[in-house]
Length: 520
Image (cartoon, rainbow, N blue to C red):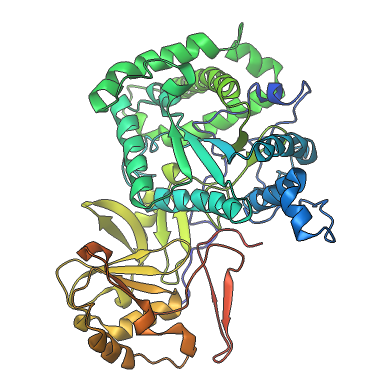
């Protein structure tokens, strides 16, 4: 059955203005000019991450050897890879991509000449939206963050494929910049960031590094942080950001009146805050709508002031880095990217909940919408909400299993109780593989019994698979620990790289990675 939502059902947030505020003072990093910043009121929808109309000036006749040895040509090649993740410049903004590319290529050229990794900086991952009853699944990272981090790690891995010194992405959280204004505790910011670091380590996203606000203000850098210490020092870090980096004489009210771009951002914040802080307004007569609206305006002004300080701190600390952004822009001082794969609109996992279909496609929207859909069920992992999925009998086995999508494509099936590989329901494995390959079985017992695995393989209807798609002797992987045992029983092998579509020449059956890095 075809699965999906109508255009009015999933309220993906086009106007996302949280937690980065990188519209301020970024011109200093390039050269002084009037920046045509994005109109945040834009209703423009096309934000495909894998569409970037950048024209390469690389001569196709240049030899591969010359291409490898010339730092500028290598910088162009890397820029083209980043371009596959880039969002389009909104129609309401003046396209300054070409001007910005000169600066980015210059930075890459310097890094390549020095034989250093390509260094990128992304302000993001603050904390989950304060409206956790209607927007997100809670205060901790979920499947959305996992996919997001895998996608960003894939960007760096793609650069590493063409550049021997690789790439590193530093994610600097802006959680402490805004959380007190929005009513989110310092402990929530710590736990969210700590869980992200555990997720990166567990999944071996080796290209990703993290930075904290204290790294921008250089305060208490020798102190080992835990939750309690973080809570104690968080107000110190925040105050030092304000004192050290707020532009002299900056007045949010004056700037809103005098600067068209900041005025647009202010209006965008108001729209964003209306949903994020809707739980603070209760129609019981204690607070009028007018008073609540005034409160939102004051919050937005405070965010603008904090954002100006945060942007200044990033410039001073990471001037040599390639500046990435979660927000659409004119391309002059930063490269705007989609942090979630195949998302047609700028959406982030900390402002939404994830939902996947049987064929592996992901949809992102508000929790309240998914909760109201009878075709969906909520999936838990380690005792907490993880994601939504469309209900399917393919997930219901006689012995309970967990089915989790893999980036860039495929499914991981693990038993919830000790289960022999002989009890695997091959018809359902095949059904899942037909929808979203490969299917990886992990954590089952008896995986050393190759004869047993071969017998299970014989029960598979391989009419739509080529001979090379299934070879149990080659696909069995037994590690020392139970957790590392895995068997890939059906489907083609994914690769987060040049090709995203594979065709079975014998069966004329085409499979496409539903969740993957942007295609070349």
